[in-house]
Image (cartoon, rainbow, N blue to C red; front, side):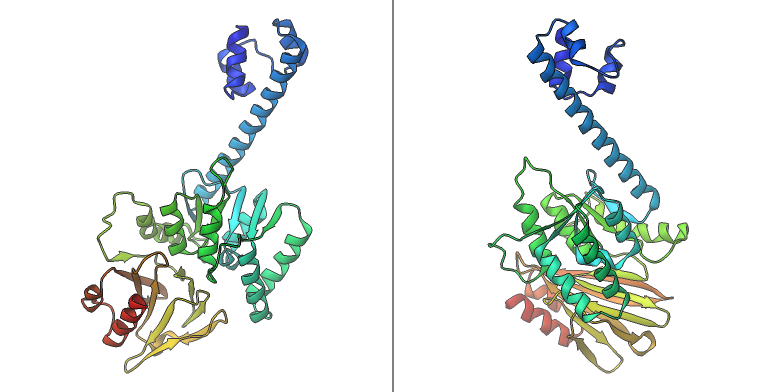
Length: 355
């Protein structure tokens, strides 16, 4: 039994796990207990401390499992299998939503890279009198006052001005033997990219309604992103129906008969298509408001940073909810075959791909 106990402890088993195998193993183990089993004092001390470490790790695992269970019960998130809500890396857009703030508040450790901190400062300055500006001002005080918040400088090798790239490069630079934080975001595209790298993530998907039925309706289409067997060659994808969506670094939110647009990604192009004209929205960060009845749809173009692939999304508002179609173009001829883009935007997509 002595060797069995030693083997279990050295293999990372906790007191609770050992007691399932050895009935008379005590709940509170002392050095004297190990000595009574025949261990010399130095080895008895080492085993006691190793068991204590195992118990701490077991407690942390249980805390993470309970936190994930709460996320699942809320029906407001999609998350990877090993996502840790207690240890998160925050994307700026998470501060926009109550469900994002809940995770930030409850997390035991929150990482904010320097690029995100700079973006938060810009947003606060531009939106000082608006809700998001006030929220960021409040959390900047929290970040300064509380130990759980850690601001980490980006590596010098990061040259991108786009925060999504900085986030992914930061996560890529963490050694495999170190624990990586879980990405917390409301950006579907960033989530897809994080998933392709094998990073853990929490995607905020329910931002507006407290009614369970509406939550379930919204979750059904977005879960398609999680399907491992989806056809990679399919160029059309139905994205979540909701009153708010974050897409290619751009936020769209329906408020009564208006849609509010905030563009964070400088590399995305946003167009509003009215009956007789298509107008580009160029201003960044500041909220822009348009009456839904005065346009037909919204169109967004974005180029992937790691290849020539162009993504295009068409957004329409139906009964106060956002509906979105997406096409992906790998070659120029695919752009000209698009059923979504008018001719002038086909040329814009072509320029993005060539440049």
